[in-house]
Image 1 (cartoon, rainbow, N blue to C red):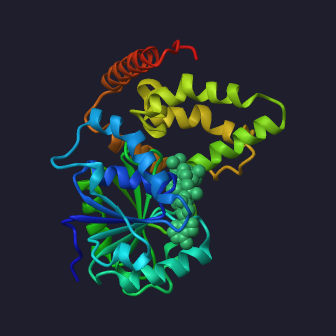
Image 2 (spheres, rainbow, N blue to C red):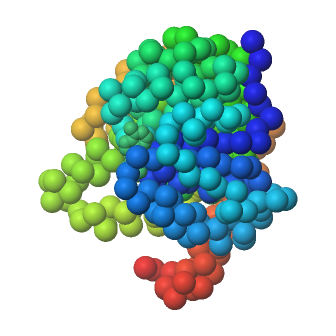
Length: 321
Ligand SMILES: NC(=O)C1=CN([C@@H]2O[C@H](COP(=O)(O)OP(=O)(O)OC[C@H]3O[C@@H](n4cnc5c(N)ncnc54)[C@H](O)[C@@H]3O)[C@@H](O)[C@H]2O)C=CC1
Ligand SMILES: C[N+](C)(C)CC(=O)CC(=O)[O-]
């Protein structure tokens, strides 16, 4: 089976925070967009959100023919999806609601139109259970604001065809995104599992009176947050091991996982796990030396710091705010 990957018409169901972000991204890429949301006043709210996002999209660069006027708001699910080449659902995070909605969407859609859900963690095998042609149904989990952040996690369910995953990846790439195929259908996928661990600890810190929410946010935005924009945790910690890299880092800081600093259970640091981590980070290092990556990291940090400073000043803020 082949799926539609050359998209002219993008359908968006649910036009809240995430749905409106998808609409903005699709419009900025020069597509026709059809949207549906059952809430009273949803169309006006959507158009307002798009207008608010548009200056950033103009700055980023619009595709030829991109226009806010290419958005059409319709009255039913069926009108929204009937002629769509690609469908993205961003309805509330409730299993029963998504189950019922996807049965309706998939029954009315073209059989070769891919269907993506923005869910943050519900499992596609569960909420696509009643779908027609479930083999073309995937999760495409985006990050807020959807019109600027590139990451989209692509997850298949029990019935999803491997070709549908590849086709969805190709569609998201054409929308300027950076798809990440989550190969196992696990709750929270990859990114939210990481974010939730941080979030849970942040709430413990507040609950225990250790720090205010502002202090906790400062702990992120003046430290790890700056480097996370260009280097992930594994490679960052490889550099933190000095010239000896990840194996030295694991020897030195691995035992602290058992103290424990967090309220979450730590994984067993088996030889296999350490070897896998070392092998993975070695592959990430490739031909680069630690020194070269340190220069790259520092260069990036300076550029990010400068960008943040200049942007804050433009908005009337000091760097420390
Ligand atoms: N807010 C976030 O940071 C992120 C949310 N998501 C996911 O995106 C989805 C939507 O979340 P948000 O946009 O944050 O929620 P939201 O509450 O901002 O928007 C949900 C929209 O769905 C509409 N709606 C209500 N019943 C509906 C139905 N039966 N069918 C279609 N639409 C319906 C509501 O009127 C509302 O406009 C959820 O699955 C959520 O897990 C994914 C990534 C990030
Ligand atoms: C809070 N959240 C789980 C809905 C967040 C996400 O899913 C991704 C994001 O934008 O942080």
